[in-house]
Image 1: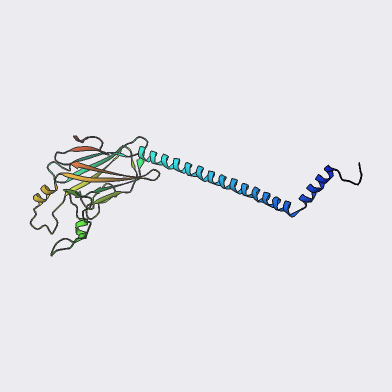
Image 2: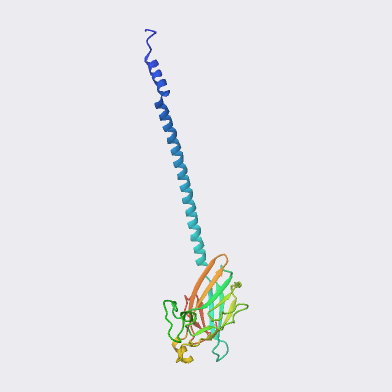
Length: 248
């Protein structure tokens, strides 16, 4: 063997060494580094996406649980309507919080007289001579009874229209609040309408709404209707049961 002739192994080693020292290898090395960086960035994005998905799922489950608990704690009231005194046109409305057992109290109760139709006073109204303004139509109570203005349980007082009474103190379960109702009068623009005719037109149904609030569990809106044809009458709100006669 000629010592001056390089072997095949020597030639292959020199070729590999030259390639590693060449610009081509530097380009490949940079490409590999970029690829590694890209893979790391992709992995980080996937981790962030997974974290966001996990947080969103946790938020959704928490919201569902809050809604379930809110529904589970829906307040129940026993509402009794009766003459304030025998033969009197003034009525007493007694509202007792009776459940559910998991709700120990409510922190605020607003009782509202509802109109015969929920859109009374809406839309365009052109006032005729001596007729009502749109504000008067909206403020007027289109029903047979209203709260006697200035009356109410404890420090609560019905507003000047007799529309609403806000009890802004905690009401424990098993306790009741008394309210006073009086007959409504024909509007000043109903010149030919008598009191008797007005009440016959309005009918015996008193439409109410109870807005109960709890500092932790939120707010509930509970409408109800009471037929005052025969009194005393007791209803359970929400009205999932038939009204019962008697003093409850």
